[in-house]
Image (cartoon, rainbow, N blue to C red; front, side, top):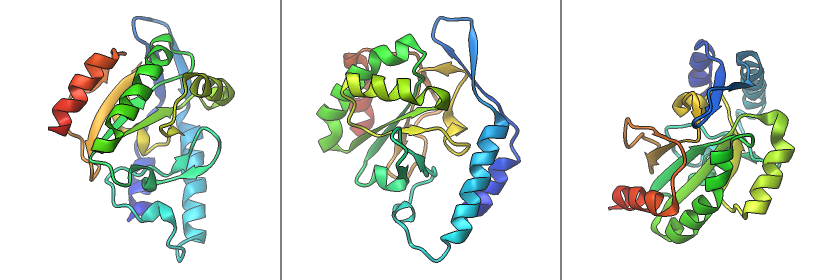
Length: 196
């Protein structure tokens, strides 16, 4: 099923382009060709591991989270194990508002993880992975920060930061994307609304 979904996504033509909030200058972050090459590699790996019941297939989740984290480790749907609410925050290391809200997102994660909140940071500027690592480490981020894939791009917008909320099965909770950074209190109010 995963292979069929990936092949269907390959047919969608799409270039990821983002703009920092309030900035009219756009920066290309990942081309369609780069993402398609990554997906083709993933398909080849899946074919090799067809009989392997790996940890990436243990958690049923509507969105395929199979990718690498910021340190190059393979991750999958296991990163949402036990979640009742999943917050995906699309950000980039070159985006000031994105970087500025990371400490508040970490605080949010610490305060609501016991209630089932899982935060996932997603970035696509893979040429800036070293910068992203430095930012994540200096911000004290403990939630997963992963590299964008074609599957993960489904909720991205033309602006960063963009945030969406999913339920425990990976279904989008609102058609509304949250564009732009927010304070801790603003995020806490949104999270509490979804957790109620």
